[in-house]
Length: 145
Image (cartoon, rainbow, N blue to C red; front, side):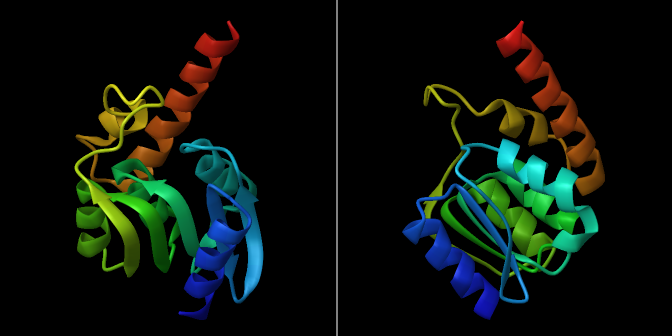
């Protein structure tokens, strides 16, 4: 689990939102909050993520499904949702966390994050990836439009 220790340390020491390490080599890092960093890593590296370890500040069901889709071998979350825990347990992905929460909220801390809302009825990681990419595109068009 050496990679998991590296990502945990980098997440905190570099004040990152996401760190991905494979075979002791940093593959991807982001300070962007939310799911965008993980989607960016998938777009850029695809199959190279298989077998990597991930540390993410906030992991809900959406990120958990993307971890399964990417073939991630171990995950650390500063904050983990109960739904994410269930996904990791079901897919036998080792995981660690600091704080367990009922659900992941949106940026305003008012309601569930839009990606978490989308993830509620999804169990297939590939379907999740496709729907999250579409949702991200839609949200960016709304923001930029």
